[in-house]
Length: 458
Image (cartoon, rainbow, N blue to C red; front, side):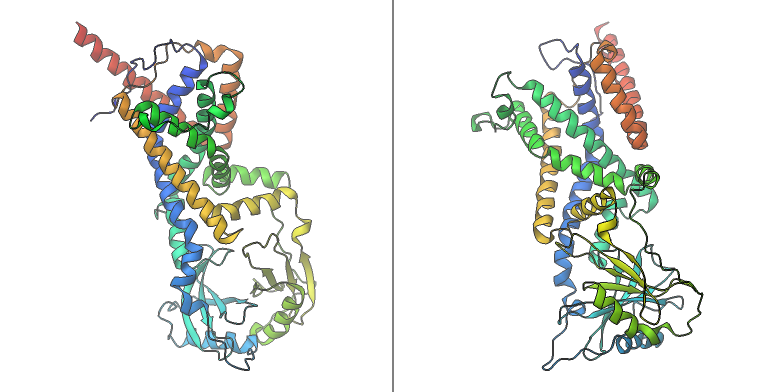
């Protein structure tokens, strides 16, 4: 089957208003962009459940059996056990000569193993080797890669990269950015189009949520109403995924980061600089003193990172946990004195909101309920894509709503519409570029279709 978006009318009334243009864009873009959104929804569905699933998959590494009259070993002993295992080559996953001790992750729960972190230039950015150490015996329970501030393990890491770039690296991030940016357009345009189809009156809003009757099963009108009702019900979630997805995207994400930095909305970094530059030959020797200060001032679990360079102190940061709305951090010198605080309460509201929204997107802010909500949203998106293609199929795989004139774009509404598209394209350039490409493709295919029809008539 050859894709041919000809100009056959699919409605009895003349499409001479702005609605016809928006409907054409919604349809054509949906046909060509929806596969990207479908892939993002499927991968996002798996990604949302990973934090819970990996607690079961990696149970033996994460957890330990608490002995009777249990007493934790010093942090130094646990770290030294991990370093010794790394140096003697007994850890199959940690064989790089370039791996260096980077920090340690401590837990409050008595049945959680301590994680000793090693940096490695051979790993992707933000990824560490995590060596799991029994806090009561210093026995090595395993080694896994750990990713991000939420301490994600390999399963979540694998799904995260698949959701973000289809495991293709930087080029693959184009797919996810196109999916996120067009999701916002489909949400706005879909609700606007569905609103205009409802009968005017006091029950107009109610009509947008009215499910079709069973007697219309399998018809185009039934598919259209189901598509409209589900899309309206999910519009807030679709816009949420669009905004948060663009925040960490390749091109739009960089633009958003510039705006945040310009207005002081970015999360402040923890200042680890010391008044005097002191070279420490063996930082592990002071780790118990530093860990004691960290646990006295911060909530467990927390991550304690070694000084990044000479003249800097340790940095302790509260780990992200379900229902933990703030994560404080502080820097500590080798004698256990606090150098500086980075309190979440002092962050700009915009920075706080960004962190909360991203954690919501990741399914980590509110634990399992958060993840189930994301699964429901992903299933809803998959349903919308499938119903959208079924609506197109009922038209005959080729007919798209006809645009008789572009004059509505010269009206006030049309000018506002173009302005909104222009501003959005500045924030999300890949949306603007793909919009131009789709317009050119649609125009070209339409002209080819008209030429073929004219030739057949002659």
